[in-house]
Image (cartoon, rainbow, N blue to C red; front, side, top):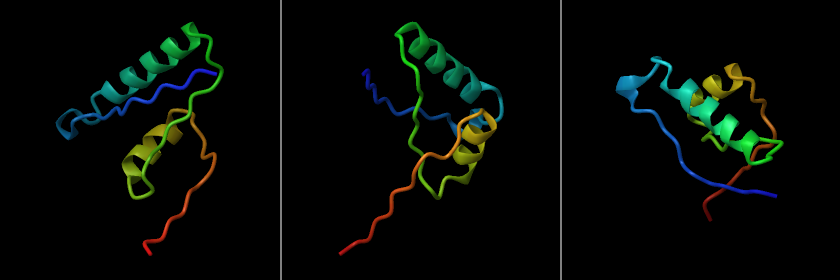
Length: 70
């Protein structure tokens, strides 16, 4: 199993210019080349823009974590 964790983000000034799609495509291709079979991303629940982007790009919700400050 290969696990790589690198935060990726797109500057809001570059939003909707294809940068996110290019990044996601590059990650997918790198993963395939390395023999990976799945891509899993983490996204904050409040980040509706990112969630919509990932879902429009073919990713589907997998699980949800809940927390509470004690």
